[in-house]
Image 1 (cartoon, rainbow, N blue to C red):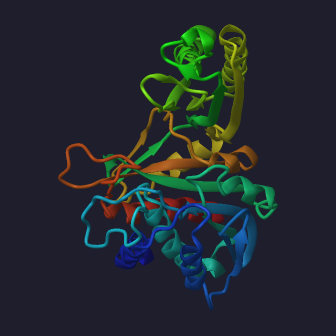
Image 2 (cartoon, one colour):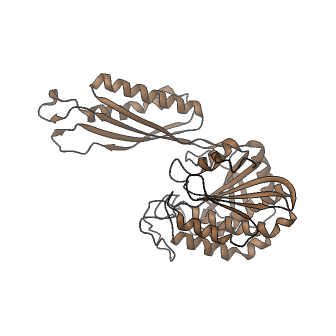
Length: 388
């Protein structure tokens, strides 16, 4: 771990460079080139344009046979106008690394370089997965899994920066740790008319308003109270003139769940409500309902092993390893864990001297860069243990 400590400033410099030059999901060409260039002339195998975009897999072969482990870091940014006023804030207007993926990539590059230097001493193989497009469904993870490039991976590890705790804190959750997510869009077509003659129209706004209210009863009346489920209406596009009954409207929403049977109930009930709207209000409905990311399930045996490794590291940079509650956010890393045993854990990055940190996806989101070394060392300890 001395190697990583000596290169902490390099990790920070890489993070700041990436922060200045963010790119949106599926558009990360320059970032991918930067990552690939980092590995040039190194004793590794590099696969570019993996999956459905700019994914990169770097394979580091140890001198002795052993397990093959995967280490994943994502590198896309968000369509957010940055408001941090950092000296290295985004130079791409309207695009920002507001979720910490710049930090994920920075620590992983230097950690990978250290593993390359040590490869003659470890038993096994490391696959570094630099993943594109985590933020935008269908994401990059699913396509990388489907490519078959990870068929030989025995176990996989990933982390995420969260400002819920200070740097030095590592959070974990065994079993279901993050929610699955669905997206739906409901197009309701009625018959327009004038506000003075509502009897001659079929008002899609009234039908849509009924749906907005009724859809909330799915969670309150159709789910087991011990099951986690959330239905959110995020957009109701019914803008028009104050005295005109519109022809059509669109409603968009978000569904969160921890277990597949919950998702199936919510989807079935949404479809049933839509059929009822058509009958009750004499409108035509078109429902688009799609899976985004599945629930993230941390494999208990691997999680227990990771927690044990980190708790026994006896490293001053790792000050606490604690269990976190399940989180209703979603992550396409879940696709890896559907196929490969492994874990995903959190790294605290709350900025110093801040009472309430801005959370991920906020235009003022920032990190304590000390968390980058914590990330590198935590994953380094786990990797070295599995390769010993």
